[in-house]
Amino acid sequence: MKSKKKKKKTPILSPGVKLFLIILLIPISITVYSLVFFTWENLRNLPIIQNLSQGETEDIQGEFDLQIPEEYIPVYISAAKAYHIPWTLLAAHHRVETRFSTMKSLVSPVGAEGHMQFMPCTFVGWSHPTCSDLGEGDIPEAEKTNPEVIKKYGGYGVDANGDGVADPFDIEDAIFSAANYLSRSGASDGELKKAIFNYNHSEEYVDDILYYYHQYEQQSEDLLQSVK
Image (cartoon, rainbow, N blue to C red; front, side):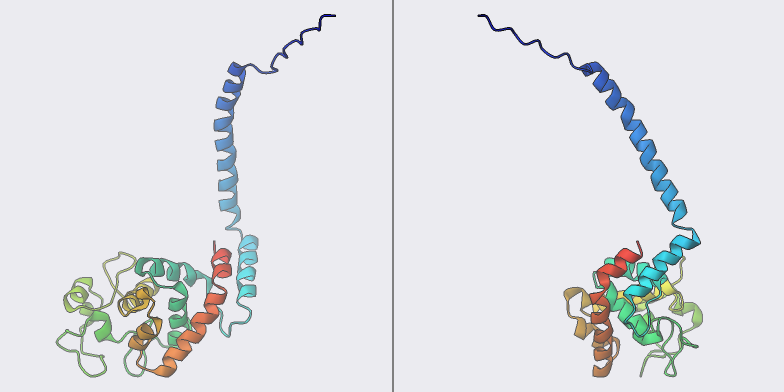
């Protein structure tokens, strides 16, 4: 008895139709993705979404004695990447120096200035002719924030936002300047204690910075996720 040959199944969709559908679906997929992306970008700016994000950040920082303001974290991260140091080290310095810029005055009794408390001679450069002793100097105000003057005298001040001024009272300039100083003092090579001690010649200061640094490091990944 002869066996019957099985008939080949005819494809539901021909290769030409499949190709047409693929070509058709590509722009549709791109359009849907774009709509979702832009919708989320608009939604994330709504107060209710921002409050949820802020609440998440506050929960992560629940054990901190003073919470890191969320708006500063991206600045720490940018400066840290530029100078190859941990962003949490910058946060620790900011915490110890000015309690995240919440002190009534950003000028210390000995003359340290700005969000990260730079002595003028450190910011502008110790080779400035007026610099001596603790580093307060007698630097004219116009020279204190002039990037060309800072470059001339070998200071650590940085014009981070590109406005032509390196200002220790501008949060971006101050944090980038601190990152610059810490990096050049050894932090970019992993010598954190050396860099911290150079920032302020005190063993107690080193211990304080490392305390907060390690605390922030433990929550680093969660904090990064919360501000994305």
